[in-house]
Image 1 (cartoon, one colour):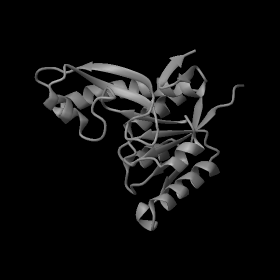
Image 2 (image 1 turned 30 degrees about the vertical axis):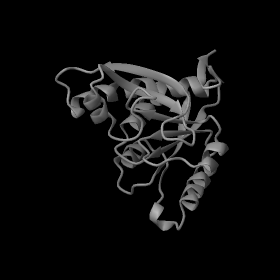
Image 3 (image 1 turned 135 degrees about the vertical axis):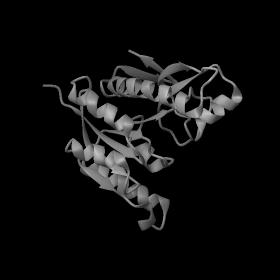
Image 4 (image 1 turned 60 degrees about the vertical axis):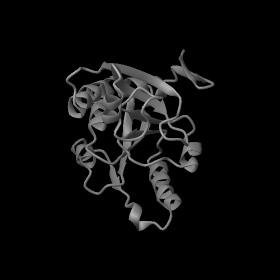
Length: 203
């Protein structure tokens, strides 16, 4: 039997992408197991989602640490304790430091609700509507030291409708996030891609 890749998932909110990943694992579409779900928010609903599926959870309070580096050192320790091979950001609202990036080189993934490199950061649906783009979408990318600047693994395009609001556009993008994030994880953990410069090429 092929060994399952061990994932560590970092969360800050409701965890809908975490739920999608769990579903794909339980349906046999993703040959992985989630070793631990770590949150920097005590009451993040993502933790409850994980507990319902008997997944180990951990709340790490950033206020307990004098320095940002110490907070991420504690995250790294919990990932190591779970023998985590790949780190998945699922609504984790903090920039990852170089120490963790180097420890998991090209093994940290994030999903962003826009077509990068357009509209990095926060409030991206509002920015897209104000700019007047005709298409938006979502992007799965490797994490580097910048803000949403890592190499792109997968993208999905969502048309922007004339009567769209931030809420309606966000909802349609989220459906695509739930579809492509597990797909991107599957590509990475099964070594089906290679990184050529900034380009992610399917093997």
